[in-house]
Each structure stands twice: as C-alpha cells, then as structure tokens.
Amino acid sequence: MDLDASIVCLNLRPPKALATSSTVELPMDIGTRTDAGRVRLNNEDSLLVAPEMGLFVLSDGMGGLACGEVASRLTVETLLAHCREADADPTLALTGKRVEGVNETSNRLASGIQLANRIVYRAAQENGNRQGMGATVVAVRCANERLNIAHVGDSRAYRLRNACLERLTQDHSFAAEQVRLGQINEDEANIGGLRNILTRAVGVEQELEVDISEELMMDGDTILMCSDGLTHEVSDKQIANILRDAKNAQEAATQLVDLANHAGGGDNITTIVIRQGARMQGALSRTGLLSRWFNMLGT
Image 1 (cartoon, helix red, strand yellow):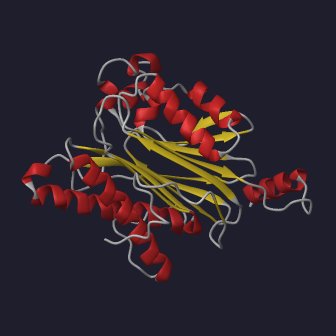
Image 2 (tube, one colour; image 1 turned 135 degrees about the vertical axis):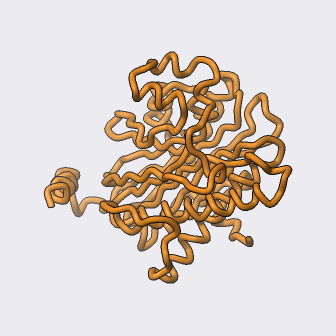
Image 3 (tube, one colour; image 1 turned 135 degrees about the horizontal axis):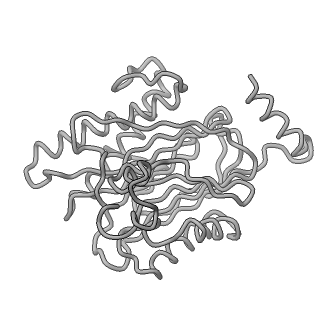
C-alpha cells in the first residue's frame, strides 16, 4: 500500500508541526517520537499522523522478530486507508457491527480497527512464521469539536486539562482487569509479568471488541498517545509534569521518550502529543468559550 510520506510517520520522519482543516476546527501543535529503547534491537511500534484529517494512530506490535512490526504497520495503514475511503464515500459500509450511542466518526474508527483485525489475522494465518503476531492500537480523530477515541490493548490516550492528567482509555490486560475487580492494586499490577498479558489485541482472534469513547475538545487541552514502553517506565505524575512544562508538543514527546530510556528503556517507546490551540484570538473570551461548552453539554 503506497502512502504519502508527509502524512504517515512510521518510524521515518516527524510530521508537520501545525495544521488546520475543515475536520480540525482548532489549530494543533503536534509532536512525535519513537525509539527502540535500551533493550530491544527492533522497533515494532508504528505511528501515523494525518493532521488535515484530524487522524492520529499509534500501534504497538507483538510477535517477535519482524512480525510485530508487520502487524503494527498493517494496522495503521489499514486505518488510514479506511478513513480516507469513507471520507470520499460516506456510504461505505462499516466493518463489524455498528456501535449504538456514538457518532459516525467513532463508528468509522472502530470499523477501521475491525478491518485491520481481519487483515492482520489473515496475514498471520497465511504465513506460518507469523503465527501469533498482533498489535495494540489507539486511534484518535478530532472532528466537530469532539475527540473520538478507539482502542484495543494497552497503548493509552491521556488528556492534560488545567494541569490535571486524566487517562482516557482502559488497558486490556490481565493485570488491569484484576485492578478493576479489586483483586490487586496498581502497585501490584506493575510487578512481574501480569501487565504484559493482553486480553485483547488486533489480529490474534477472528472476533474483536473495540472500546470507543468521545470527549469534548477545549482550548488548551493536551492529548498524549503512547505505547506501554512509556507507561512501564514513567509514572502518571512524571507524564503530567512534562506535558505541563514543555514549551511545545515536540519537546514534550521527546522528553517523555528520553525519560523512559533513562529509567531503563525496557521496551519500544512511542509518543504522540497534540496540543489544542485557541479557536479565536480576542473575538471571544475564555469565559464565552466555557459558556458555549456548558450549553452544548446541556443539549
């Protein structure tokens, strides 16, 4: 599949730093960084930024050797191609079941992940050397003043708003499920190999459940998408401090990866940082913007 190198960033080059479009109403400052870490020789993470589409995707491959890299690359390429095709033809059928209660953009992200699941699964079945390969994925699309999020696995999305960091995704891992059930605490979950046992991943099984969430976008929001190579080494408090203090999105993305490497760099580390800018300068006060958001919440 041929892809425009100015749009997709698969461990190759940084994306454009600033972009606006009809899909993305607010200007965005974007930074990315991916690194193999201090232990692994191969980087199996893939990332994609298509700011003119408001689309951002991060995938962490698994399966060893080149298999994980293949799985993650197929995942991000499939999502981009599917969203592009749907933009050109809104009547394009969804892959998998429609999710009720969420908008069309969220359903399209879930559809793209379902399609990627089929493609990665088929690729693994057709090549015995790739048996067991799979990938996590977290995908974000900014549209109509909303943040649409779809994810599978333990790659995460965070939001920093008013200096408060909030996790926008829940890990699909055995350890995370035990924490949610109250069987163990967060500290216990980070000990041993339980956190590495995924309960969902792209391409491992024929059927896949995709988590979807939607959030209102506000001026000053900072979104972080990351692979577990970051969160296994860096605490949420450290993440919040860097996102808050960095001069721009690229500095934040770079500092987070550097900190994870300094802490051990036990896995591949990938970050995408998106800083939301102000819609209008001077014409509308911040109070007015907040009033508008609260009015929207009331409708």
